[in-house]
Amino acid sequence: MGPPVVRLPKAAQAAGMVFARRRFLTSLRDRHGPAFVLDVPPFGKTLVVSDPAALKQLFTAGPDVAGTPQPNLGRMLGAGSIFGLDGEPHRLRRKLLVPPFHGRRMHAYAGLIEEEFQREAATWPVGREFATLTPFMRITLNVILRAVFGADGAELRELRETLPAFVTYGSRLTMLPVTDRGIGPWKPWRKFREYRASYDRTVQILIDRARGDDQRDDILAMLLQSRYEDGAPMTDAHVKDELLTLLAAGHETTATTLAWAVERLSRHPAALSALVDDLDRGGTDLLQATILEIQRTRPVVINTARRVNGDGLVIGGMPVPRGWTVLAGIDLVQTDGTVFPDPHRFDPRRFVGEKPATYAWIPFGGGTRRCVGAAFANLEMTVVLRTLLRDFELHTTRAAGERWHPRGVAYAPAKGGRAVVHRRTGSRPAQHERMAATA
Image (cartoon, rainbow, N blue to C red; front, top):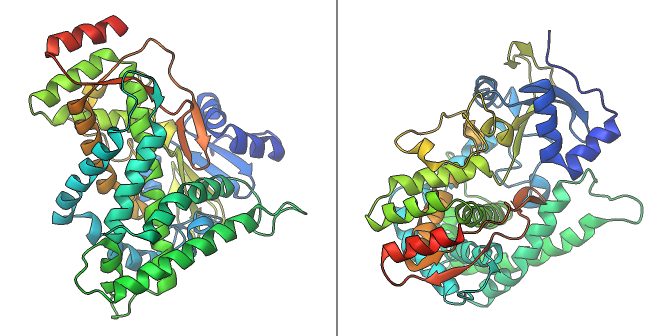
């Protein structure tokens, strides 16, 4: 006997996935359990799974059996993006993208991240409530631009101005079941293509400039110098696709997680106070545990998917037919009470000295398609939160938690992670008293 089939009309399923995806899937999980079947455009028959054992079966399946779904983020990022590739081309591309985000290079990025945080934080309205999402977006965008392109210049200033709108528009567009041709006179992809053409012109200038400078060691230079196993370089078109992937995925999701961090910590004074105390003593474990718990309770991306390309995929005892989509419920497994006790309680200490199970905590996805920039994202969150709590006092609040707000692919706090901060002065006991007074 297979998993239950959702009997709602296709139109109702499509509406649920487009307009209320998180609540829709959570309600179906609560009703049907950790596996159920949808029939929803544009993916068709879709098996939704959120049991760690089932997720392991999905993520460890070979690319000839379970590959990238269609349509995918390649519509936005380009066919040459790692998100648009599958099978052997994906494996070869991933090998070229891993080196910039591992090893000694990661240490070099830490100073850059702290510098950008302090530059932005100098403009914060101290003592007055403000939304942190936009400042965090500027920090993470500047970090990835500098990491990718090295020095500043007119082209980087142009990208700094145009990329946020481009990424937000493209992210929202990819969530709509609308073909590239549009619907009648409504052709939203036309505007997207204009954004993309402008991006391509700007980045081609930067590519040409980097190709003539053999002293550079930024990510763009590394991609231009990289070679496939047969000695061939990446084409300029594919470099532009991968750079867009890094610039889009490399700043919005991290900034959104940081805004959620402010939102969660400001509503949990005991967790905030314990974290500040630990950081003041030079500790690192509680900060890492806090980052894990923020990503567990507020994952920015709530689903990842695979397309069944071949025979032999068995999940939970059910052979999944060729042509089906399997949707991995990131939010669903991470808020499952059988996986994480008291799942809706924000408790960073659950991860102190204990890493989450591989297929239960999956905010970066899993398997061969796990986010290649996960280590870089974790470094950014670590440096920003450590520096923020070292330099500022984050006030707590009794306000209700901010709602989840879809920004296309990502979910952000509806009010932008609002906060009140003061520059840190005085003794820790005095700060404890102020935290307690606002709790």
